[in-house]
Image 1: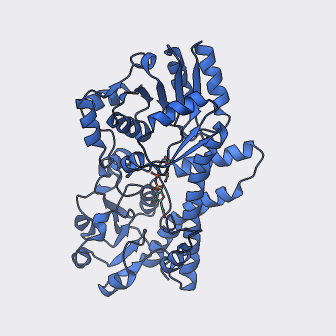
Image 2: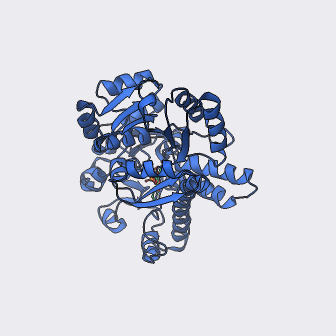
Image 3: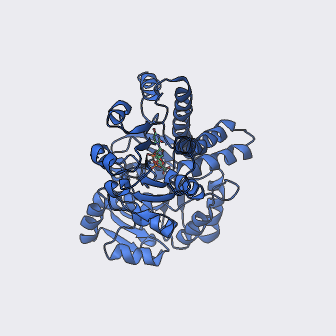
Length: 429
Ligand code: UGA
């Protein structure tokens, strides 16, 4: 099948690469000519395990192409997948400008019946407007469908190759059949439903996951005050299959380009529909309070941070990505700097992306040991695997003071205390 993908972000690029790998002819279109140039020269715009190999394999066999031109492939494509961003506006709602511009361009290039698939996360009423735009720009028959995306950064390839579910929101049997054919080789439950339900599944899922995290953080805060160990409490609670153990890890809160954006948008969507979804506002409040709580712990232990040297381990919003959008690290660093501390940091992958945002406000190091040198405190902010393997005896010997603030509960409190650290986890009694 010839397929066009609009947008070469995480969703578009990974989906395009995987669909090419299952022997479709895929064209990835982006209006950013620099990005397309660099993709054509073999560079990948972000770090995602396993993606570079798949892109290389498929570009070398001409099954995957990158272009700025809508007219090159849309006339011959059976399916066009739109994967552009829907960022947050000032008032919390999703900014759909990229989506509307993209669908207009797509419509102008249609030549025969095509299935238009929206993978971007969109408020429910968006499809009405999308249909209006398409109809105003073409007479060619089409079906507009919603296939929300559930991949996670850092495991995007695995999640796309082996999804748990494929959601197809459509009112057309013809479009549904074509999409079932496109995804036939992929495992996972098929959820065939109407358009509003498909879009709601995405928002409801992301908001629920974020709620789980904030619940875990709230429990951890109570554990801290009553002397209980949140790890034991949350694991104990998670053994109930109705609850489950995943997404109950307390820490410095959730970040990334999805949860904060989708929560704000869903609060606004609910409000517009006359529903006051205050629970989600609390989820956001608890999340941002986690940063304040963490920094408060540091100032309580160290006193004034004026002139103190603080080392940060991990900058990415989570491991296995170089993405720092809404990363807790940035908010923590901001507070530390305004309290007069000097900050140095190391991340296995995300130093370059952080440098673009923070510039020379902090110092960048090439290992955790360099960060520890002369530090008054170490802050573990992203739980990269390599931090589990650190020689903590060496780390402590390099530090000026032995304060270890573990923002992801990566270390065993008894072990690190026995090594002489003054240890603070999240909700560890
Ligand atoms: C999230 C969803 O998990 C995906 O299913 C969805 O497709 C994606 O958003 C999206 O909407 O595009 P992602 O943002 O890549 O994926 O990352 P997650 O693995 O969900 O982690 C989000 C944040 O929550 C991270 O900052 C992570 O550190 C934090 N987190 C996660 C916790 O603090 N505790 C946990 O127990 C789990």
